[in-house]
Length: 107
Image (cartoon, rainbow, N blue to C red; front, side):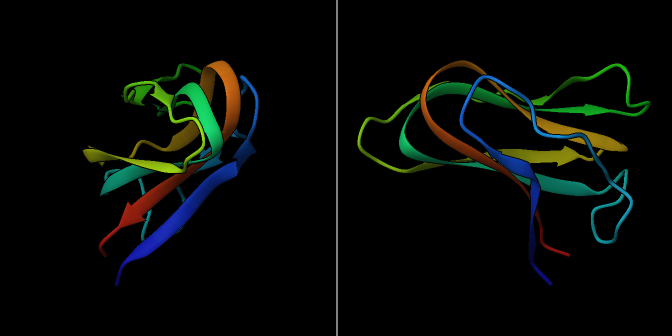
């Protein structure tokens, strides 16, 4: 069964979501998923999803191209990635808009 799970809160500045532990089925460590970012309110920013196995050292799971979508809404989706134990969304180079990070799992 398809699920779409939000990663932390909606971001509207250069910041990171709270770290989310992947401890609930179907989003367990080692699971293959697709990541997505929904942008709104004329988004102009660079966003990425980071992961960690120890909640200390984070590396990029997915770092898509920056968006500059004045006056529109956009969604980006990753190729398949394997979930680590911890995950967070991060926005850098922020000018405007909001970003919402998701884990998409086909079950």
